[in-house]
Length: 318
Image (cartoon, rainbow, N blue to C red; front, side, top):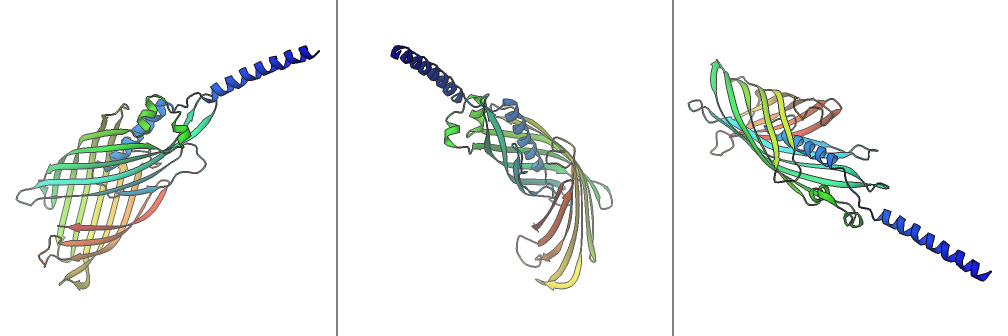
């Protein structure tokens, strides 16, 4: 009887050991992120960089929080410092340039076939852009300005998951996500109509612009492309307030800007169009021997489909 019981215990122990070993093997199966998902998010990151391929007032500063209740939610911060101007009326070479920073924090879902885990990720990008054009006068106060645009940027990724999870990473997708880098360049052009009508009692600026810049990644295992195509309309009215400062009139400023995104940017952040309304004051320091001739402080209200926001901008003229 004792021998039979002992045999049963041994059989049970062997079966339990096999089951535990199989379960342990399943637990040790490597978690993987779908490579297609990684590539899709990389394309999105490149498309986000295309927002800064050319100077754009409406998207120069954007901050959007992550959506709640979504396993693959994301948050975003974008900021751009840019500007441009023609050298002179006698030598109408137009130059523009800008630098931009963005932080994109998506959440991936990784699976080992049995269990699923969220993988928080932080992607940071820094880019520089430029443009070279020439002014062709087509009417009084109206110029046609073709522009050649270029851009160069760098995207860095960093997994912020727990060390236990990172120890089980595998595959080229994790190699890219963990401390990975992706360089990108963009080439394209813009066509601008620029209307300037300056008089002592008021100043009017209106610009319409079509831009198309194609972005491509390099120096990365993830190959991505993005199309940055948009049309924009910008207008500004400046007039004296009746006050003086720095021995010059203090002007009030009214601004309007509207951008329609036609390329991969369209719908990427939940909207295809952005509109900005602004008002502020401008100080004129041109009487003094300083490099800055005008300084503007403008409060802006930006809105579009599913998005609303405010900002305060500081701009200078040279």
